[in-house]
Length: 377
Ligand SMILES: *Cc1c(COP(=O)(O)O)cnc(C)c1O
Image (tube, rainbow, N blue to C red):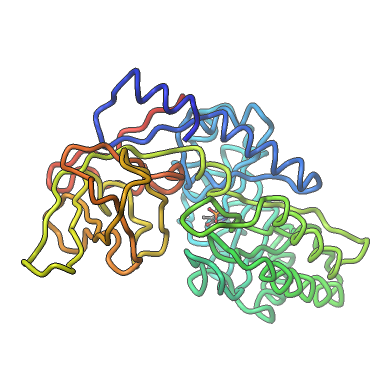
């Protein structure tokens, strides 16, 4: 937790649960990524945290934005982003939304199917389009596979059709999966992208851009490599497969820019046991759960680090759960979390690196629990 956040919590004593984001950390992360991958254009994937405080700051720092809906496009425009800096990167769009995005000046679009290409040809004539390809997402804690992308042979045909439909076949994209911890995945994916470049060259089309997606990590329970190691892996993969004829490069970080910038403070509502058995884990119920913004604990995929006022004391196993009347609202049961034996009802505890994929995942009031409140400082 940064000093700025610690001071805010001590002085303001906000009601829990709440998320506090330190904007300096976001700015630092953006600069560090730019430094380590200077030739790539950064398109912040705003779904990770679309708060206007973050989007306008990044717009001012020269970021581009990856958007998935007309609302996200407007959120960026409202924050001062130039439409020429936006990518409509969702492969699943309504034609009228494409039309509206085009009218606002957006000229860069993703697709992975013939039907989507037809919509783009009609609603966004002449635009730059890139085809998302399927890549294996192993090594990712939060996969983004199968649902998005198509096989290379199909991508080749679609990009030729894109040209014939009056669009600009601009490039190829992939996403190796979010919170990707296997650096070798980029080499595999870039290799597939390069194959597509070659196949299209033979058809007389020169692709110009590789969109390497997101996947760069935040710091959860398991240690991860520094961003420099990721940048290094990306550049090695690019030079390995493209030699010195590097195409334009786009990266779409979400989690790695904002994840570590925020902490959620939550209160212990109840600590209980289900039987008199000595060795049973305590159940610790917090005032935030899966429906309050912690959706990424689904299948215990993302494992947040936890701070308590009793850190350093003896610990014991716990099951962590949220406050709602839904038995799906259990955060961690199998992940082997241990918390101090001194933990008591009313204690405030902090979930670290919760700046990404929390506020927008919180429900609008299931069981009467308000959406996650957030402060940007
Ligand atoms: C969600 C998403 C991202 C961001 O992924 P992170 O792993 O959070 O960096 C980037 N690109 C696309 C197309 C996405 O859907």
